[in-house]
Length: 184
Image 1 (cartoon, rainbow, N blue to C red):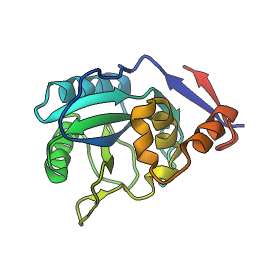
Image 2 (cartoon, rainbow, N blue to C red):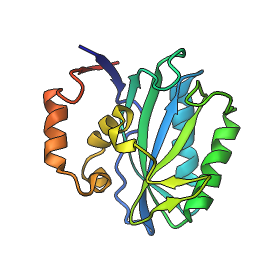
Image 3 (tube, helix red, strand yellow):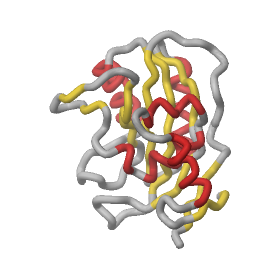
Image 4 (cartoon, rainbow, N blue to C red):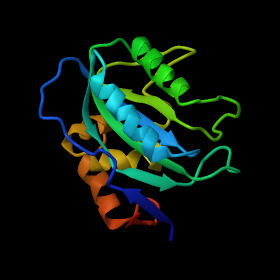
């Protein structure tokens, strides 16, 4: 049975404000250095930004890498935003944040100090060489499913077209991958 550790100490919250714009789900990941510190800095930066409102954040999950396997495990979570920015403008903002945290793109699916991905955008699809929305395969990734499942009703729109209660039941019963959760 696989054990997945998680942290509720991440600045997990749900905004009471009604922001303008569309909902956007951002995946956040890290496996090099002080990941928790970086994640807190990212959320603080986004909360101060123009055209972006942080709606909710998930707990963080510690899980094995996929793709390139010879690397440390990852801490992953999701941030639900409301934004009036365009997809490409938000991408540029997120890449700037990654670069400030010394993100290097040397190996596909390799180790990283910070990874910020636009996973889903309410009512928007983009298919360009630099950006794909929704992010390919994000609904199948454990590192996304678990965090989205715990940000509450705000995150349910991400699973549009799927039976949310069935997904939720699988997690509660631990049947999604035969694992269990343990608080870190």
